Amino acid sequence: MDFSGIRTLLVMLLLGGGTFYLWDRNKRAEEYSGTETELRTIEGNLVQRKSDIEFLTKKLEPLRTLAKEAEVKDAIKLEQEIGALRDELSTLNTDWEAAIKSFEASVEEVRINAKQQTFPEITLPSGEILKAASISKFGEGFVSIQHDGGVKRILANDLPDGWVKKYSLDYVPDSGNEALAGKVKEKTEEPLSPADLADAAKGKVDAIYEQEVKLATQIRELQMEANRITQEGFRAAINKGLTGDAAAAARRAFFAKADSLRKSIEPKRAQYSKLREQRLAIEQEQIRKENAAKPQRQ
Image (cartoon, rainbow, N blue to C red; front, side, top):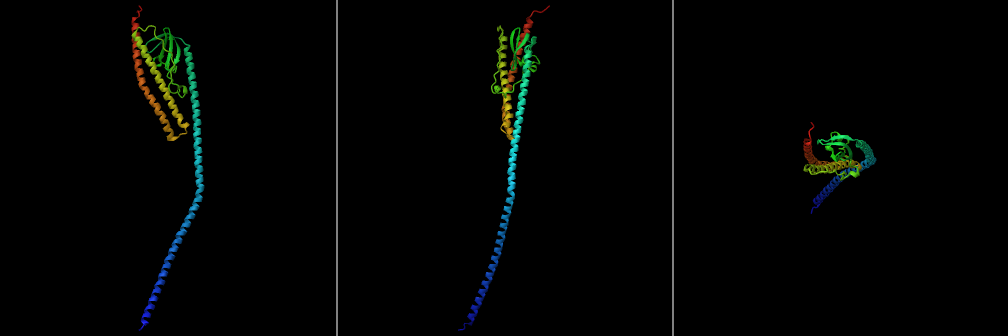
């Protein structure tokens, strides 16, 4: 049997397999080499990136420190501005209170001098004439006048022209004063009743007048309370250290409440005006009848 052909075939197979093995090995080695190079490149990039991050972090730290210092400085600056504003407000409040005291002292001096005067006669808007008259008391929104017929308490609107301005009868005190906060009670003496109330019209006038006095007192109380709340609004925002929108919001809450109180005054004013017109009409009619009943001089 001739084995030479088979040996030749086996040799060829071995040579072919070895060649393929070497080729595959070389190919894989090349691929591995390429992959290794790529990995090394990526690794190098990561190292470089890490280095860059560390470098930037070192540069960033001083900047962060400066930023924190800036925030502290801003906070200190803001606190200083608030403190200065508080000091300014305190000064303004002091000046305001001093001005009020000075004004009230001047008003009091004018009123004291007025009490020392005697008026031969005082003609009221209703036409009534008070003879040998002198002012016995200045109240809040009224004046008591002593005359030859007794004592008459007259509301500001019923006094002669110019009296309200001259004696500051429309002045409503700054109700920031605790004594005036909330409900303010107006202390007045009761008007003397006429000796003879047989005249029904006269009795009606007195009843209407008492209603006017009550309304006038209520109106002044509401005005003073509205003033107090408004002053609170101005002070609150600064005292709490508020600024910008927060301060505006705090003031708006107070101002809205004060406006609400002022609006509630309007119906009372209307009612007061109606009562006053009614009373003046009755008084003028009485004066007309009294004058008509007097004997005419020849």
